[in-house]
Image (cartoon, rainbow, N blue to C red; front, side):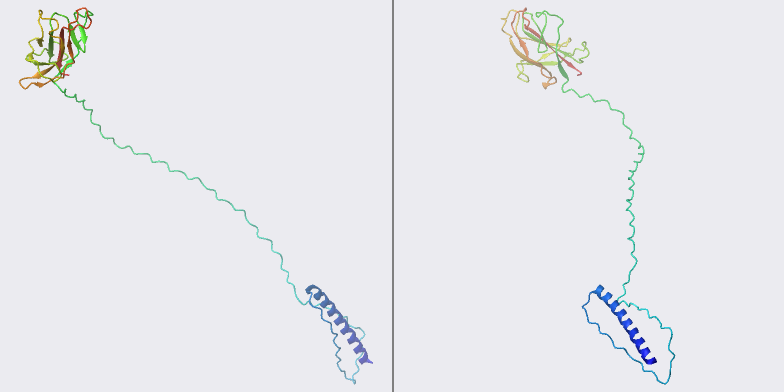
Length: 263
């Protein structure tokens, strides 16, 4: 009697275990979707008992709790929040300060030499031509042509006045030779004339009784040194002697030319 009851209990327990395992297998299979395999019900194993021993029948049958054994354990890791990114802070660029220029150290200035007096260029010649002037409007008394003083007097002549100092009208130079010619630097009209005590050298080309056309022409004069004949003054402008009437504003019978030194 006892053997039969234990056998029945064992069968029921085995059925429960198989059913539980089967349900768990079905859940696992549904998740993994493997190929379906036909379940095979294991046969119960019977443990022989000694007939000589009578074991009292248990009043309370223990409850077997089915346990679902998962085929795979899923490890769920806690989700880590993404690291908080700090905003990129741009460095503050400080403006580059330009270095202040160093205060220049005053340097001693070289001593400037005192200004030298401007050298007066030495004149090219000892005497220079001086333009004449008139203090009257009467052409018979005086008129100016090319800086030469012209007058009407009844004969043709050229008077040359030589002064040692152009600033002093009383510095008449005596004993100075003057050359006459028909062109600048041309052949002399002999003889060369020499200044007297009044500083005047005169060459007459016609007399009072000569025809008016005798001394008409153009002449040039300059100062020379004797006996070499070297020129020591510039040339005079053209001196034009004519036979015009004394009432003509261009009459020129007597011409006066001036040279002075110290210029």
